Length: 114
Length: 157
Image (cartoon, each protein chain N blue to C red):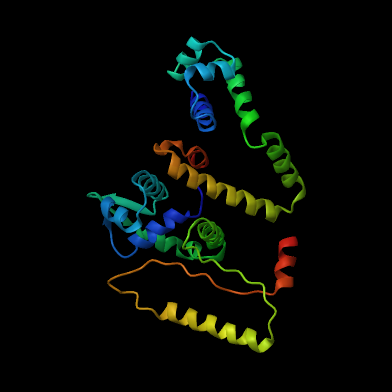
């Protein structure tokens, strides 16, 4: 359910003005089903994938970014990669401090402690 | 657990270093939004750097004394410096009051020495400043210089 919330939040960031009807149309699911999902009903895997595909299409050059990250990981010296990861990590913590009112959302910090 | 402090964590630690403060007092001194402040204080408490007692937040001196060397080490600080400089550049671009300056110059050795002298004076004024001013203005200065060729070389390493 945590992943479901994350993907819906991401969708809303990309399409903040979409009504339930617009979401249903864009994702390719029935209106009443979209309504139920937004009210908290659990997504099916196929629905999760449908949401994910819609997000991936609109996300900033998603494929290109992933390709670039992989290239960077395999080609750059470890020090450069480490610096980049460190900087990315700090940006992510800052983002979470600002955008996540519930502290338990610091997943990776908790993960490391776990 | 991440073994470094973020910008906001550092900011709050620096403020709490002098005295324990309530949430409202920290809020007033930092101008951070309540949720940002709450999240940051919580992170500091998870790291055991800060504790809360009678609605007052204070630094856990035992933790910080045990980790002073690490906290002030170059390795710990370099991430913060990069983030601050980045943020200063972005602020300068987006704000009307931005004044970040970077100048490529061709100067004689004498001229370089004169500028280095000014940098030395700035350093001296800042480090000798009376830390107990009543009206403190928290401000960040950034200065420095480097050989153009060596800086380019560093970027290529």
